[in-house]
Length: 289
Image 1 (cartoon, rainbow, N blue to C red):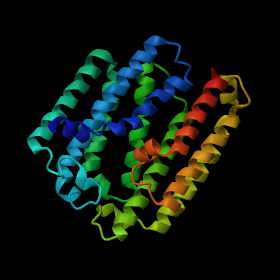
Image 2 (cartoon, helix red, strand yellow; image 1 turned 135 degrees about the vertical axis):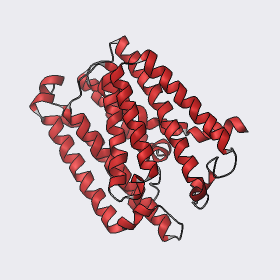
Image 3 (cartoon, rainbow, N blue to C red; image 1 turned 60 degrees about the horizontal axis):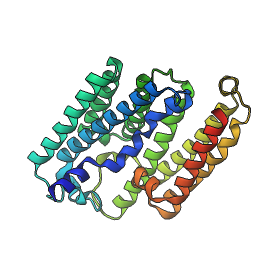
């Protein structure tokens, strides 16, 4: 029982977010370089350890408030499935694994990136998550750091496009999560202080704006001369179909079904989104490889 609770505490389903680490390798023609693939895998494992470490620290801090939340009350600490001492021990194991992976398997520049990720998340857990707009920007920056981690590990230079698109998509997902938080708040559940700076009209409008910016930015990316020259094809714009379909489906989940509380859970459970992402990956692979 304790081992299951420890695994649950680490939130392994959230490791899906670390898939962004592979994007520099994918778009940088590094899949054929085994050394780059192995180092990207190390970076992925390192960020998984870092993510679990910060999740546990956050749960240790918010255990009392989590007990009042309709979903978070089932987390191991809030549900008293683990003691604080046990949770701290698990967090230290993840931190030790991160240190070993970073020091022995990855370049020094990766240490700074993953260190920045941990500091950002600790500050977020301490007070930044209570400041409206700043909270979602912090979430988006965490995804951008994953991109830098992947490029550093694979020794591939990032395109400005991949950084911009990652930041925009992460903001869109964070806004969807805040909208779900607002719905729970309207039902009388106590929520975080940052929600005082949001309402459904603002978040919904912001999501529509972000979706529009993402689509326009992606279209500009696909037809830009540098991308056409790099990938040797003028047909990259065809992949925009999957991007638009995915955004519309996610907005349907958010506005119609009102189930956007966890982007990772949405992605795991929604068949339509899984098909769209798979089709996007396959179509991009065919066009550039």
